[in-house]
Length: 408
Image 1 (cartoon, rainbow, N blue to C red):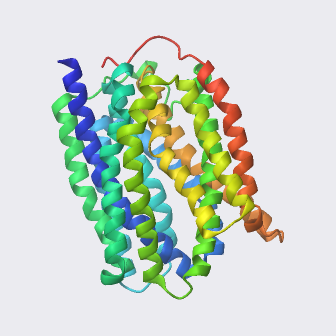
Image 2 (cartoon, rainbow, N blue to C red):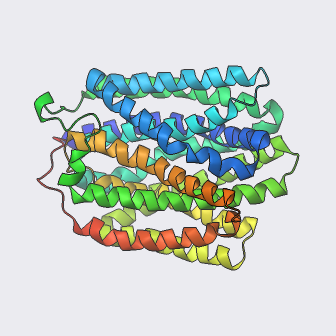
């Protein structure tokens, strides 16, 4: 019976994530193209440099709201609030204003990880480790269906309805996601939070000192997101050269790219991840991730084209959304409430975006000093993949204190 309820929680939260990711595909491609057309692809690192400040403030606010409202109402408020912000940005876009595009670009980078990690916080609080190793892949697969559908819809509709209209679709998609996740909490209950006197604070930063796994995790997330940032910058720069003066065509191409990526990821999520996590040691799974990226980036360094750079970026995102995500989430399950709901958001919301934003800040500074950073993006990605490989050893060696605390 317990396992049946675990499957139901996982399925419902995965469906909420499916709607959220479908909406994200509408805003991902459109906001990127709108920003590039307003300010140029060369200024992507500049806007990303603001990300750590934006995300840290957002995560701090999330921690405070969580303390006031609890997990269920916090997720409901952040989901509906995100829909309202996106809708407001869309209305401003209708006036012809370009100044809203940086706000839209930054917000889409923040809201998606905040919502997805809250879904996973509840899933990790509801599953045992044995169950998670079997179904974390399919969970990401169900969610990934939304991303695939969203990407294909962007690719087929961008030139018909226009780039700006896609932003509205992202806001609408959050409504069923908010309803589903709220109903799941109501049906299965909220995980028990620690008494206030035993709490580690809104961000639970002291938990990091107590648990080496969390320190290793945030270090890996930071290094991996530097890879994501530099591959993205290189890819976007090459696409801007390819689609000069053709905004809707580029939006459509990006929609097809992400639709193809998300469709391919489904195979990894439904088939590869469950097999890999069931039959391979967790350490080996984590070692495989940076090793694959080292090979792909090496090929892009040898011949940097839209195809090779796009392939390296494609593979990074494919494994990040599937096998790496599934293997990483298993590590949170034995941990306590503050680690799963607070420290996790620091790692997987702030850490993910700070890795991109921090590297962007350095890139902007070097660009201002006259360094042609575009020539070094791939080399930076290769070095960060090596660092990631080294960090896997302390991650998989560390053991969390105590046993399974999720009560699942």
